[in-house]
Amino acid sequence: MKKVYIETYGCQMNVSDSEVVLSLLADAGYGRTSDIAEADVILANTCSVRDNAEQRIRGRIDYFAQYRKARPGVLVGILGCMAERLKEALTESGKVDIVAGPDAYRSLPALLEAAFDGHPQVNVLLSREETYADINPVRTDDAGVSAFISIMRGCNNVCSYCVVPFTRGAERSRDPHSIVREACDVFRRGYREVTLLGQNVDSYLWNGPAGEEVNFARLLEKVAQISPELRVRFSTSNPQDISDEVVHTMARYENICRHIHLPVQSGSNRMLEKMRRRYTREWYLERVAFIRSVIPDCGLTTDVIAGFCSETEEDHRDTLSLFEEVGFDAAFMFCYSERPGTLAARKYPDDVPQEVKVRRLNEIIALQGRKSLESYRADIGKTFRVLVEGPSKKGSGQLCGRASNNKMCVFEAPGCKAGDYVEVLVRDCTSATLLCTLEKTCTAKN
Image 1 (spheres, helix red, strand yellow):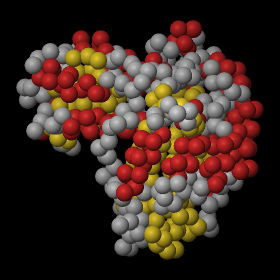
Image 2 (tube, one colour):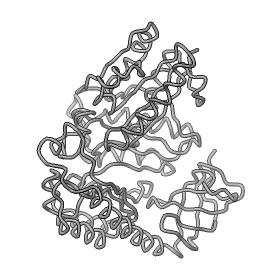
Image 3 (cartoon, rainbow, N blue to C red):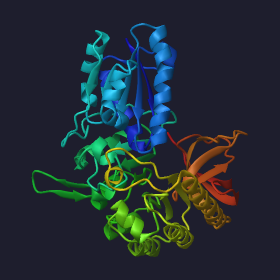
Image 4 (cartoon, rainbow, N blue to C red):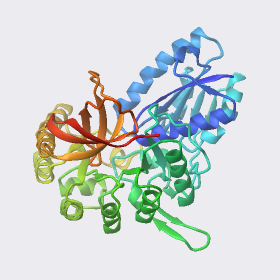
């Protein structure tokens, strides 16, 4: 049996895709290994959202080449978004044997077979139908607690800075019956949390042959009804598309986690229009207010870009003031990174100096650090039901797990294990962790 080693970079969707790849290769007779030194096939599932992500992969390709040289016959493959975007450069490097885009994973066994015969292989064709709905992924969560389930692929928004529509293709939704079957399967196998994934989950829409129509709110409900002991999360939402129905569905089911990741990208209407985000600052704030009116304890996180094309100090101050007003629990914060092929790269000069981007980013980070600490301090004295994920990264015999609002809790719970539900009391906090004591064990994983 040939062995395959895989590294995954980027978003949760890439983690889900890697699990699909491992399943397809297992069916073709390949075994998985976590030791790169014994691998016959070395794969990297890549991300192209930012330039530094691509640069990191370039460094890994050089690292993989050492094993390729040391053991003749070892193949190196690049999968995912970077594969689709840089197919020629990758194959011409002489260090990569296989290049496969996000919609080409079914062809991997055939590509590998041909590559073992000494012929480099490329398949980056995008599809309007592929959802991998019939694939039973090989789960890579070693704790067996949380599973990712892809509900759709691609994106139709074409934000001016984003390369995803070009690397993942047009939006298509997966059959809801296959999604529910997959969620039922992981629950039967002991998993206690699923995360429904899509580039924009709120635009999920499936029309069945018999006239059945399922939108995202209805899909959420179907998965939540599997069992009250199965937690349901989702990512990512788009401010322009998240509906009142979705929010009310979240409020109706206790096992749908009280957390929404709602990328804002900028607090400036001028920037939002230039980014082609299709909502305004005022619309975003209205959505936040509505969410909190229906689910007062809902956790909110976001993404933001510092230094987008032509961003002024006034635009930047608008972003800072939005962060002050909303008070996010946490945020993913980045400098703008021009991506070749996007509308912004074709139309708008990347004219904000790097030192200005970094300074603005640091100001956002500092502000968010303060708001995160305020948010976490507000939970001191509260009791949360937490799903145990495993040992705390800092050790000391402590366990960790997330509350429904997605905040990480750390606590001592002798006799408890990953997959158990516990009730904890928040005694203290940092800006990223709730420090808790165990109140009681709610349910134990079988």
